Image (spheres, rainbow, N blue to C red):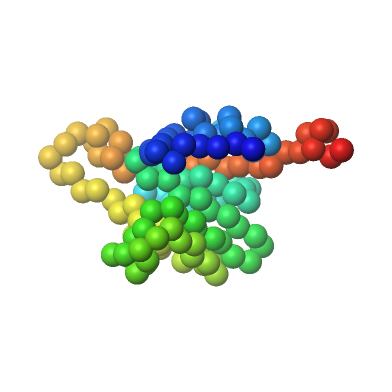
Length: 137
């Protein structure tokens, strides 16, 4: 079994993924800005993805008909929950609408363009599960 200390907070995906040898990055890490959620999510075939806009990270799972947004942070101001939650979305459009609520664009009119991009950027880690031969026995 793999354990992560309950005192650990704001750990990067790279620091955690090595603890789960069957989870593999599917392609490269995709980067974008919050206004590009929709095209970035469409740019690859994925079933599970970690989406990080530091310091926040959420997990997104999908099947043929729906998308699940899983968040370990309570969001009483957005989703009326005082604990971790999962939201089922019937469409990519609905998922993107909730992601834009979670990660709104930060308007910084008096800073250089590069800093505005940095504050509004995210990383998408598309993941796949690989079994190894010892798992099959």
